[in-house]
Length: 240
Image (tube, rainbow, N blue to C red; front, side, top):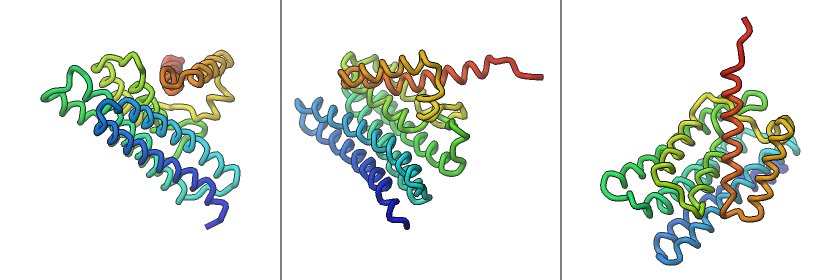
């Protein structure tokens, strides 16, 4: 193996380690009672750090011309932990179990929804490993975008309605295994209309100022842009 592969693979490994740490922080949150919210914030932070590593590892591999099957498989294993298991556990323990609707059959429902998100994320990664991406687009929303959406919303101070959160988890799971097209980051940054890029930059600045309150704007705006593009494609007249 080319020794230059070590650099992007190290970033991928850090991504995986951050996912493990996020899971550990959620476990601590359930044990520490009054200190729980602080542990949940640390879990969200490490998931976001995993997202940064995931953003950089592929680009570094392409820059060094060392993309490999090993790196691709390692990346998928890391992503299913950092953006599948960790966000699902964060939402289940930090949001659903603390809600007013968390007894009896609802507890089983919340567990099933969280598990479904993980399973759909794993299926999305497996499909990508087999078929790859189509040009500058992905088939189905990438699992990092879905996982970061749940992470941002779970930590939103206003605490959105439990039923709405359940719908979002189910919708995010569906988007991952759907055949809808979502742009990769380069396409979004360089090819999107200027007003869209300006709005995304504004969201980025807002998220930097107060990430706990507004980080969710970034993944939500990505999903909205992708869904809007699919809607426009569906409404556009087809040539005879």
